[in-house]
Length: 375
Image (cartoon, rainbow, N blue to C red; front, side):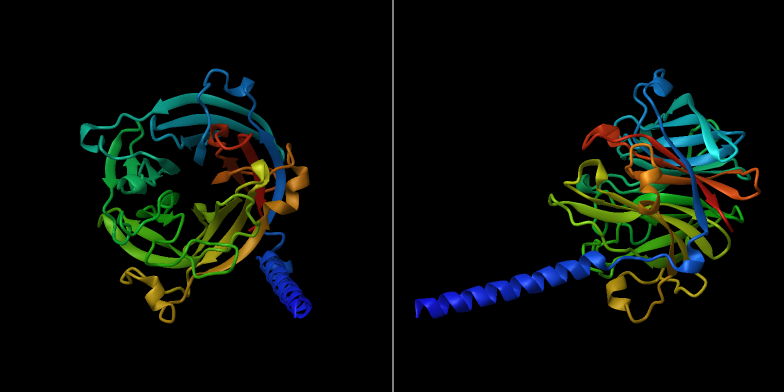
C-alpha cells in the first residue's frame, strides 16, 4: 500500500512539475518579435556612459527621466528627484554617426510657488514647444501619499505658467503609485500636448506580469486653448519577459514622441528584480491610432474590452539586439527619448538616456544612446 502510494505520489509530482516546466517555458518564450520588414526602421549607431569627470561640477547629477532637443547640440534634461526638483542643460555633440562629447552646461532648480507647495514634483518627462515657447513637464506625484500626478507648463525662465491636475480618470484612488505621467510629447500642430500614464489605471486593467494580460494605458491629448483633454486612446502593454529572482517586476511606458498625425514612438522599459543591473529590457514601438477608439468617455476599460479598438502596436527595436555593442554590455534603466539633429546622411537621429536611480538599487550608469530613424 505504501509503495503504491509512493509511486502514485511520485507520478503526480513529476506530472505537475513537467506541466509547470512547460508552462514556464511557454511564458518565457512568448514575446514581441520584430517583423522582417520592420527590422531596419531603427538602427543602432553609438552609445556612451557619462563619467564622474564629465559631471564633476554637478556632483548631484543623475536620475535623468526625460530629455528633449533644443537645437545647436543642446538638450534639456529632467531629473527624478522630488525632494529637489531640477533640470539640466547639456551639450551632446554628434560627429558623423558617433557621440563625440557630453557636457553639463547648467543646473536649473525649480522655484515652487506657495500655491503648489503641497504637491509632489516627481518629474518624469519633458518636451519643449518652440512655437509656444513652453516646456511641458509630467509628474507622477506620489499616489501612496494621496498626492496626484499632473502635467505643467514652464516658460523660458522655467517658471510655472500652468499646472494641470485633477485630470479625468487619473484620480488618486484610481491610479497606481509610480505609474503616472512618464511620457509627454509636443503636438505637431502646436495646439496642445500628448501624455501617457506609465501603468494601467486600476479600473482599466492589471499591471503587466509574466503572462500576457489586458494591461492598457491611456494616451491623452490636452488642448491648450480649451484647457482639457479632448482625445484619448488605449495601448496595451506587453508582458514582463524576464523572470524576477526577487518579488518585483514592472513594465511600462517611459516616454513617447509624435511622428505624424496618427503615429508615435513608444519607449517601453521592463525590469525584473534580482538580476542586478541586468534586469532591464527596453524596446521601442510604433503606435498607430488611426483606427483606435476614442476612449475618453469610458471610465472602466475592463468593462469595455469588446467595445474598443486598441491602438495598433508594432515592435521596431529591441535593445537586446545590441547588448554586446554597449560599453558595459548592459541595458540600463532607459527612460527618455528625444529627436536629435539630422544626421549627415540625411536621416533623423534619436537620443536616449537612462535614469541611474543614483545607484540606489544596483551599480547603474548614466547611459546615452544614439539611434538612427530610417523613416
